[in-house]
Length: 91
Image (tube, rainbow, N blue to C red; front, side, top):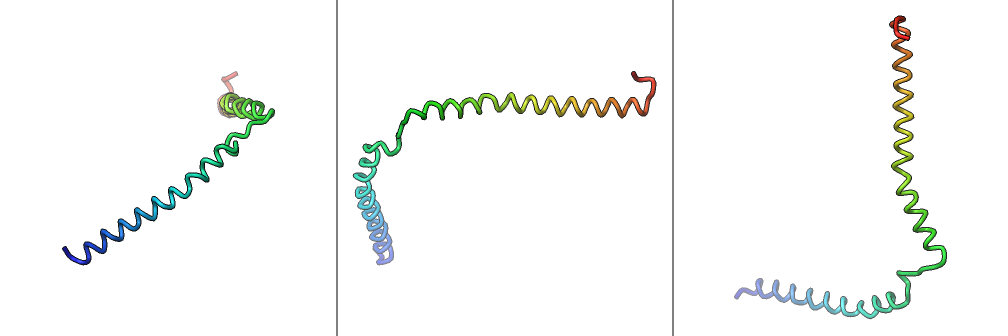
């Protein structure tokens, strides 16, 4: 085998060993942060935050529907007045 091939294999092996070592060093830190309730801190106001977030998500389509209907009605109204000005037989 060539020296270049062995050098490449050794380089990949050292990289894998380094990644495994650093990965194992991080495991106790991750367990400690999960055990300390750092990620799941629930207070008395948390249900209200969830309620308000879901309320906005539910009512946003209705608000959009009202805005689009209002805009469409205003556009039809201007089109009707423009037709009345051009054609006086339309009442």
